[in-house]
Image (tube, rainbow, N blue to C red; front, side, top):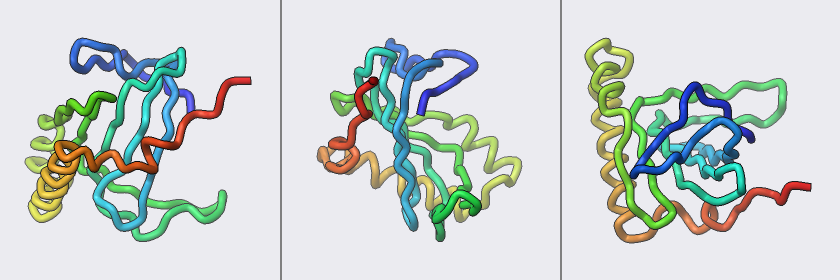
Length: 139
């Protein structure tokens, strides 16, 4: 998928997401996150973007069906070297304050974020499958 954004996203001093960059999205049933693998315009990996979500009970099984994903505002960026940073803390706090997400869901999101960070530190996340799947070469 080719990405369109309103403005480039810089993390660790580098543009990691911009219009014309490509991404592969990994969405899981019953997990508290998804993962997007981003590439710049030359096809070089810029990193992994993880959205914290309420677990999806069902995923798309045909093009005329819809899966509902509930974003919990917290995000995690992981560079190709394994450095990470938590993103959108302000949106997360705003979501709690405005009651877009319950305190229970917020607590679960924090727990799952902490678990992901531990896995990143142990080099167990992103998973081997996510790391191995690559963009198809441009024709």
